[in-house]
Image 1: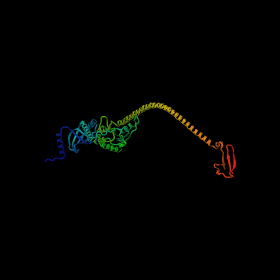
Image 2: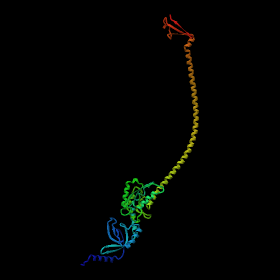
Image 3: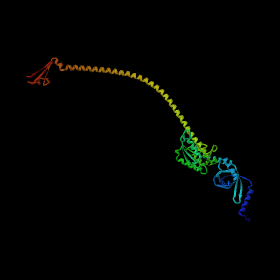
Length: 409
């Protein structure tokens, strides 16, 4: 049996591979562990996962030498607006190599960005289809947008230039509308973007009654970093959030899954601020129109009521005059009737008094004495019977004219 050293055996394998794999091959695979050394060479790993279980079923090392990588990376990122980083699927042209020291590897010589674009689009469509099947795709977009979106929960990086632009735009609006933005810091690019934004949303949810809208903005950075917003979990959280969400995370031509499920999508942070100011302007114009309409209605109503009052006043004056005349006539009748009744009453009373006076005059002692009668008194009292007199009593007799004293015998 022939004996080989490791170097000899590896050399034999290398020679065999070169003889068998003489051509270049287009390889579709996911990349991971992407590293660039100081010399500009890119070292990565190609993997293939089971589509159902996600378990890695194949793995191979890959190399992109610096003279190729300097051209492929910008070409790929400019075309796909996606960073050349772990977790994406690519279609690359490779040669199969085996080095005695470094072992089996695939050397990349070309790349087809259209494959990655197609895969990204497929992933987006799959996520959107899943959200639609779950019945949550349009939930946030169907929320009623507040008339005055002043209380704003802002999810962004505290150091982002776009955040400062956003605040500056709100603060310097010409109409001097007042806004109340509160920042909820989050990572806006990289692997931690998804969990960071979801954590901020959870915090806002606990204070949801204090906010009118949620704004997710991202300023600066590369368009290639937008892939982190094509996340199912992030999209599902935003789609089901109970407050309208406005996004301003990309450029005009970039639309992520997050943009699609949000209530409103704007291009940039300043565009989001302009949208909020426009909402306030629309509300202001609407309220102004309503105010003018109310004033016009009030003026018209006042004019109508003034005419009605003038007509009513004239009718009231006329009616009052007629009523006063009737009342005056009635009062005159009442006065005349009362005067007549009083005249008759006093006449009757006068006659009665005259009769009583005549009776009293006829019944008076003076009248009786004038007819020849006299009055006998004893001790100042009239004597009505002789039986009360005793011999020796002094009595006085009163005549119409004069009086005399007598002694009883």
